[in-house]
Length: 297
Image 1 (spheres, rainbow, N blue to C red):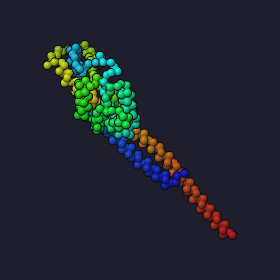
Image 2: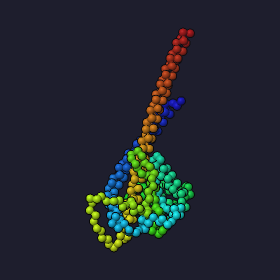
Image 3: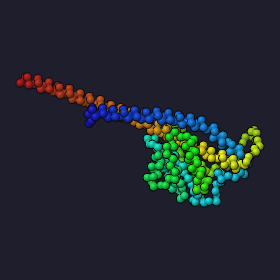
Image 4: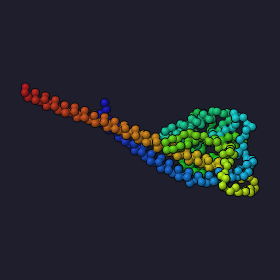
């Protein structure tokens, strides 16, 4: 059994670790609130873009655009797909990175003409270790997501899509369902589906006439890239929020485990201390008896 000094040393080490996990919990909590606020501040703009596209397509449904071309003439197994994979730059976030990397790996192996666009250092390290070719690495984009960083990603995939090097583009990220559930998810970024924008308007809403200059195709050429940037930005922020939430849960679990260990060690320390005191008393009594017997002789 360990002595009191060893137990005290272990208890001090656990308390120091608790300070770190508690601090990391507070930092992640602050970052989570900041990420949610960013998303709330920018959502109205991108919802407005979505509504604008819906209005255009509702009035001129026959509009043709390469951003809505589903390329049905290309066999599914031959389509060139791009996967934007959003991971974290560091660990200590539970299964956050594992889940999204696992989904991305499974999707990547389903086709032959795939390209990877990795956001986050851990994802880059994983795919490099697996020997999978990464087309573009977006370093330091995960921390403090911004529209500028989202636009960098959007510009790259749009460039390849416009050049015909990609037929479809997907984003693999982590969606935060609620405060306790985060799931790896996949959304199709390009091409867009007209059906997603052409919901029927309520009967009581005035259906205005729209005059387009120079053309609907030209407007979509300008609006769609901004809309795509907004989707990427939303996935960056939601992934960042999921990462912080996962880290909070992991740090809370670690702190609770540390408290349980401290309680067990405290009980063990008291038992060892009590045993040491009992032994000392026994030794004193034994010594006193020995001295008493010696005097009698």
